[in-house]
Each structure stands twice: as structure tokens, then as C-alpha cells.
Length: 312
Image 1 (cartoon, helix red, strand yellow):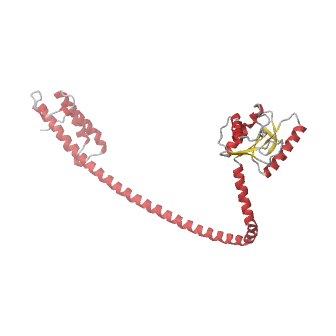
Image 2: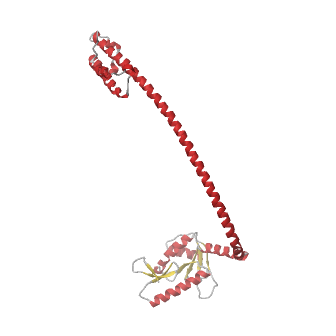
Image 3: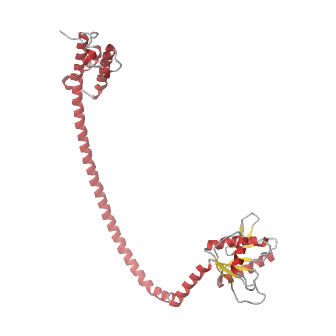
């Protein structure tokens, strides 16, 4: 007796799935659709929500006929025997192929690593050869040049490194560094038994500055009718710059119009400054309609455009 396949198995039977072990990846969707049709038929007949609610007790009820149960059992066995078992074989085959590919990839990576090490080794050899050639060439050149200049250097350095010159140079640098934190004030009234520190504090208050000051004293030889300058020290050259920048406001402060503040310059700097002042006066006298100032060690013309200067 020839058994007629249920409707949801006809497509599977016609495709030849599982015959003689034939099963490919293209058959997966076909088997999935057949399984879904079988599940939906059982769920619909049993009137349960989803396939996970199907139980043996539910199948053993009077409403479900023996013929229906036989059809479902046959369909399930058919899908298991003709589809699931070959599918497991295909998966095992694919897994074997995957492991083989992994082994091949590991082998290829090892070969690549060996090639990279070989390239690095060859580069190191080439660099070593080039380095040796350059080293020998430079060594010969330097040796030759040193012989040529050694006598000249010996003669010039012997004079430059004399103890007296070294001491003088170090002293000059130290004095310059120490002087950079000094401020000189001209025009402050000198009085008998005066408190110089207090006068410096009052002056700083007029500039709205509160620096930490030390070593406040008059400098120079005391002479009748002469108000000696005051020198004091602050914590940094930046503070000196800040005080000098604000010093111009004193011309508008009562009692301080004739007070002038300057940095503590060396003898060379004072001579250079005096030359600049002389040049400045000469320019102003020759061209009274123009405004000249001293900026960055030069006499410059202040342009009509605010903040712009021109060299003269």
C-alpha cells in the first residue's frame, strides 16, 4: 500500500533531501518550512498557543483521532530520519572543514611570521653595514679635522679660560641676575632719620601694587640739597616689569609728579641708556610735531595708529 505524504512533506520528498546522504545548505530553509507547517497544524488542532505547550497528555485526548496522530508521528519521523540525521552529518563535515581551515591559517601565520623575522634580520644586517661604513668615514674625517683645529682651539681657549676672566664672567652674570630684581626710585624727598621702607610702601600703594620688598635704602654719597635715589628689591623680574609698567601714572598723583622709577642698570646699560635719551631729545627737538619714544633699546616714532611704531 502506497502511503500519501502529508501536504507539508511533499516539497521535501520531491527535493530528494536525505536520499543517499544528499543534503546541502540550500535545503535548510525547505526543511525549516516543513517543520513549521507541522508545528502549526498540531498547535491549531490542539487549540494551544504555541508549540512549546504541546504535551503527551494533550495529545491523548478523544478529540484527536488515531489517524491524525499517526500522520503527525510519521511526519516527525520522516523529518528526523530524512533531514535531521543528514543535517547533522553535514554539520560534522563542515566542522571538519572549518578545523582544517583553522589549521591551514595557523600554518600560514607561522610562515608569515618567519618571513617577517627574515626581513627584519636582513634589514638589521644592511643597517649594520651602512652604520659601519658611516662610522669609519666620520671617524677618519673627524680625526683629520681635529688635528687641523686642535692647535687653534688650544691657543684660543687658553686665553679665554684664564682664572681672572672666569671669575669676572661669573661675577658679571651673578650681578646681572641679582640686579634684575632691583627697582630704583628717583625724586623722592630725602629727610633726616627717615623710614625708607615706609616711603617705598606708600609709593607702591599709589601704584596699587603690594609686592614683597626688601633691602630698601638710599644709594650714593649723601650731599646737601641732593635727594639720593632709593633702591629696593622685589621677588622677581616680572614684579619689576609690573611696577615699571604702572610708573607712568605717578605724573597725575599729587606729590609724586617728579618721581621717576627705573630698573637697576649696570654701568654699561646706563651709558647705553644715556645715548638713547640724548638721541630721543634730539629727535623731539628736530621734529616737535611727532612723538618719539624709547622702545626695546631703540628710538621709535609712535604712529597715529594706536599701538603702532616705526623705526627711525
